[in-house]
Amino acid sequence: MNRFRGGFEAVPRWTIVVAAVGGALVLLPLAAMATRVNWGGFLALVSSESSVAALELSLRTSLAATVLCVLFGVPMALVLARTSFPGQRVVRTVVLLPLVLPPVIGGIALLAAFGRQGLLGHTLEVLGVEIAFSTTAVVIAQTFVALPFLVLSLEGSLRVAGTRYEAVAATLGARPTTVLARITLPLVFPALLSGAVLSFARALGEFGATLTFAGSLQGTTRTLPLEIYLQREMDPDAAVALSLVLVVVSLVVVGLTLRTVPDGQASDRGSGRSFLGLGSRSGGLS
Amino acid sequence: MSLRSVAAVAFAAVLAVAVTACSAGTPASPTAESGPAAKTVSARGSITVFAAASLTATFSELAKKFEAAHPGVSVETSFAGSSELVAQISAGAPADVFASADTATMAKLTTASLVAGAPVNFATNVLEIAVPPKNPAAVRSFADLARPGTKTVVCASVVPCGAATVAVERSTGVALSPVSEENSVTDVLGKVSSGEADAGVVYVTDVKAAGSSVRGIAIPRAKQSVNTYPIAVLKGAANPTTARAFDRFVTGPIGRSVLVAAGFGAP
Image (cartoon, rainbow over all chains, first blue to last red):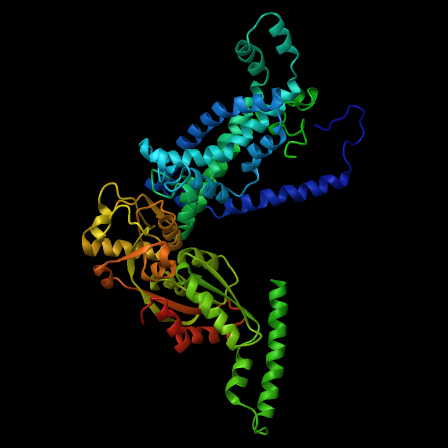
């Protein structure tokens, strides 16, 4: 990305050294964990009944959470990017809050809202909806923590894409919904895709809010991270093996995200399609 | 780590001076009181105590009492599920003393030869049912927990309170289908006191410590599957002298009175 045609060095050499140390900080623990894997028993460990149930539950709930993120996140990003209203900065800050909030706090907050004794608990009980200790609780917790990824990614991209084409379409008589479907969404599709994939990854890794809000029961609420946490106590080998599975899944997911962002396009458009859209709008959290 | 070794060296130096001073001074000085003086010499510096989640209240109190009895000593406590603590200790967490909620979990450390000397049993505990104050599911017995629609939370079978729960299930012939299997007994209690669950299987002492936020319902059969709590000084203890003093303090009369007041039984 820093290849300049003039042939001069793009970055001072010392930054490369520091960058390598930073990279090692991330890579070393993961590599060290890989050395702990008991390869002989790997397959048996990751294919145990509880492991498979946890992986299956994780994939199912993360997928559902991703769908919810797209469903709610796209309109949220549109409203934040294309309209202006009093208190918009505050709203944006609150929407992005789960990004920086310790997940256990998210869990406590979700309990306060959707728990049996929570704000909506009684109403939900009357409606016959039981959220506590259900898979629904897991999906809600995952959506809570993953939603900001989609909103942030998409809003940045919407702002960079600008409103020129949309204005032209509107003057030609297209209705707002037509403009959205035919112009706006296709324009920001890569950002929508990478936002969705990141939301999925975040949902897959969700632990704290789930444990606090949903509990831990095989096949119902015990997702892969919770299973790893429990296995750590009785079978560290299984915990390491499952951790490796989650690392690989996450790697694939992040790899996919980066592939949706072609290098050239990203720099041409002022990183409008950059990772999370952070490059285009540095004041995102202010 | 380095701070710890510096502290250890400093401690050793202080101890050496103190011991020399003592052995030189005591016979000659008629005013020296051997009791308190011996205490100050034997316990110095700081120790870290890892204790089962169900010991949170009692060991916090015992740590304070121990500090008060031994000026200059500070006791750091860390509470979690016993298995979690064993995992931490096995991974090299700096702890001087470990108190487990059952002998099986302590045995993991003794087999790994991470314990100095033999663990000493210092308390027992039995399971009880905890329900929210209003008892929404009208639970009256252990068998009621298996009723469909009753949201029961238990400990996962890999942690001591969960193993004890399984034992009670076997002896009563009641098979529970819990809505959640938590990693520690305090997590179970939290789900009950917050009203999320209708009932939880916890220790008698947890119900007592929770005060008015939960109600306890005895499980007569639980008396047959009593949990025994062992305590041990760890081989990797940075401050073994003070660790042993704390060990004796817990198993001694003051420890006994604090534990009994909290509802623990004698081993």
